[in-house]
Image 1 (cartoon, rainbow, N blue to C red):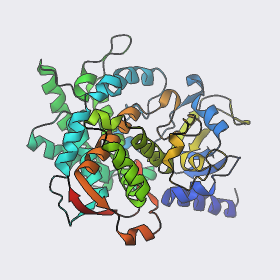
Image 2 (image 1 turned 60 degrees about the vertical axis):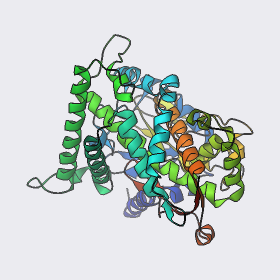
Image 3 (image 1 turned 90 degrees about the vertical axis):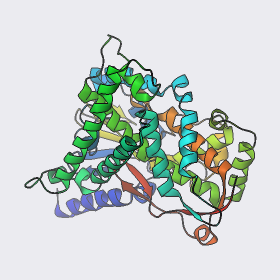
Image 4 (image 1 turned 180 degrees about the vertical axis):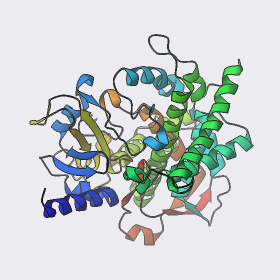
Length: 437
């Protein structure tokens, strides 16, 4: 590799890491794969076409696995569903996934609405709603109460503090550059991350022990996973269970928070969209009805198209495989660049326009729209996240009447910038609160 090629590769990697939307949108019309080199992982061949997405998402389980090392492994742990492959992935998924399906998800909706109402209870007319901050608070509270079933105020405060510290410790260069993961005399960023992760695991361990010693049924996610088995009757070890619960915190809290922020921004940036959502909400009275509203769900889907919170889907090949006519070998890593595919003009007319109607007029294929990944590795929390967003948005907008300040409307939309496992708006969005109720 020449010096010029090396510099070019480093520049591309820096652009992708600092400004993923800008980098991937630049490649939205590409019909050929484009490489990006990641520290520790190596070169990933990214695609933006529907045919490539089909080949990657339908690749046989015997020919692909989760790429390792993964930047988020220090936070989620080696037993996380995100990192497992093969039989271990199938067993863990069989135990964890049912807690996020159908009737189980519908059973969480009232509590999600209650959490949301509590978080905006102190907001008054004439004030401002800092959307990103409130979204973080709501989605973290949902995780603590719906997933872990923590109602005790003191323990809830412990979970909130430790989780926030862990997610902040697990972001930035420490995640992207593996050789930084070392401590010096028990000090430094890596030592802080390990210490906070240990604190969270102690909280989780105590909660697990209490649940196992109790005959009471709580109905939360932890309860369902503790009582679930795989096809052979096996259960998760305590270590594996802690890793799955930490994964839910990292993947569920951060991704839902950023999606909620973007959705409220787009709703209040366009009066026709805001009135459409409010008109539909006027026909619903319960959280379950909020979750079923077609236009609101279209707004959420369009938000996820324009701002997929995790912008890449990766597979490491374990044998020879062809992606969109290109032959690869075992060990190669291929990926779908979601911002590129979601803005591909061959797949999406006027991709730069926020247009929820595209999700009312027809259902896109999973090979042109994949904010939750796809295939056998599709995010188990996809249905939960869609319902959560609908209930939170519905609860906020039936409680508060707000508007986006004129100055913010005139500005360009924020960029998406990396933070931890997700990407977030590059600036805080403040909505003016007009009335309550």
